[in-house]
Length: 455
Image (cartoon, rainbow, N blue to C red; front, side, top):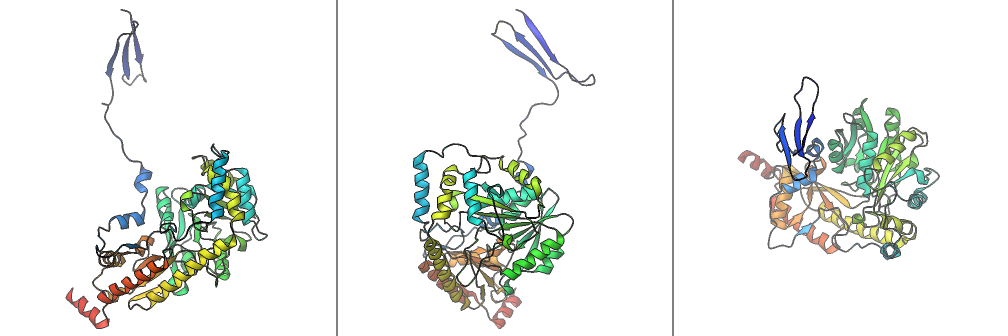
């Protein structure tokens, strides 16, 4: 039997790596000794995965509590307007998708930044003299969350920091920390309808600050910034030469007595990446269609940021092509009455909830002006048996089967968030149960002092 020796050698000061004997008759194969380290399994999670932390999931998953079996569960925790079926999308929206699906023309891959015609449709929808847009200024993404991820990834490097609202949407921190980006939290002021504490914001800026996140209208606050306040925010960004990442997924979802101003329409020099999508205004969060609008009238971003977004978008193959095919119809043919009716329901629920909770001793709701949420302060001194908002909301579940998110999830303890997209009768029942719960546990000044002495 003929055989051959294959010897793989490294440098002269290293041992051979592998000796292999092969038989030429094709029937046998013998491997010599593998020299060097002994093979062993060593599969470990990546550093990125270890740095990824969702505070909402971490807190909610640790709430080991069972609802009261005698009361049907009412969940006011999930920011998904489709859960209860009382807020369906418009027929024009669903018919547009059905037509595209039947056409068979959108079953293949699209460019990673989206079809040119779809980018043109989005640009046309948002274009205005104050903030002009063309197709090249639009990047389509898989939902607004991916838009935020790409915007962060193109603006910030590991070791830099970003400025994030407190209270604020937890995804900003989740994404940033996974990328090795530091998060600095700037305060919102509940006594000023959640306006930004501008002095505190500006004090956080340093040479490593990569961008400022502005969320308007706000999750979790339901607040809407005035034109003058947005101009003051832009003044800070301009003085400090910090670009803005604008999370405007709730854009135009404001109540009738309020006006929404896209921040880019007020900026003459601050470069802005505005993130939005279909999820909330069109009530289709599961369709995963979002976008980034690039506003850069002074050419501060230049080609570098645009090219960076293009390259980052190529890591996946872009958003759903079926929804892309229907996008122009959805944007331009959805009847105005649909938007009006949705906002009318949300405003009615917000008013009912605010009025009911305002009448409960120990609670201080902050009136919302848009989006789908309402924040409520817990006067913890009047509920001394609870350590914090997490314990308060846990007991609310176990005793009354009402689930509100503790605002610790949003870096803002001793508040809780209410979602106002549920049916009206459910809002009223939930508020009634919250009142019963608070009356059961509320302690006046003297009672609270006695409780403290007993501890």
